Length: 298
Picture 1 (spheres, rainbow, N blue to C red):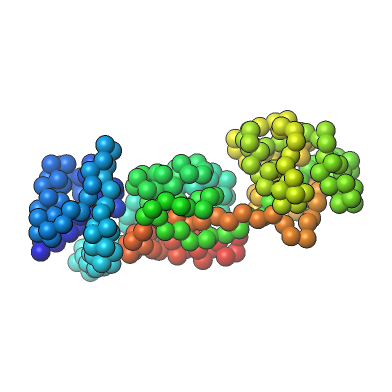
Picture 2 (cartoon, one colour; picture 1 turned 180 degrees about the vertical axis):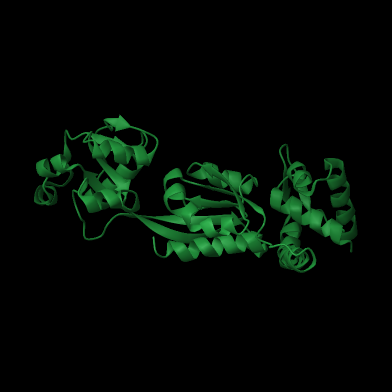
């Protein structure tokens, strides 16, 4: 069987679209269509169902891709390394994740891979939008703040975010720890909250875990960037719930104070998500392994 047809099949399976596969392989869309039809004729089974936007693989295609991917990717690596003399890491990876942890922890962990030749293109966002983009092959790897429940996506737990209730020293004087322990969320009535969205997602998680209730008042200040939430808390605008890694420096210097240290701190798991089968590609496997290794120390 012609390896070109198999290579094209795998590109379409990964991209979820004849158009995106054509772009990746530098071929015309009619050429991609013709190759897939030829392969379907040879195997005697339908491999893709055509949709208004893109294609979805049949179970036959999923099984074939799972068997082919490790071998075709190994051939690609051998060709790059031993025949062309290039580092298989010299590829472009489209990575996506929440802006704060991506900028603060993820990208610094990949700096040496970039020095070796890896090309990174980064998209910032959160939630299900990133996973939708991953499934549609707009991203290659995603740091997800929600558990992936999308067909064709494989996820690895990456790290736990610990949330901490913080305020400037003046707020800590008004809200001593013993008062919060005694009165719970009632001690915070009338205290302005700074949040990253109108839903007060982090505040809700903290209140549910620590106080076993929901916040009853809207945030006084909403800014859609947790780094800006840190700055507002430092300025004394109000109290905030933040990932500990994001405010660790301010806590260490005393510019912010942890208003409460619950025995079991609220946690949320981050996931590293890829399309199923993609980790057979050497450059993605190296990037994935690097992040999993470095995240153990976050």
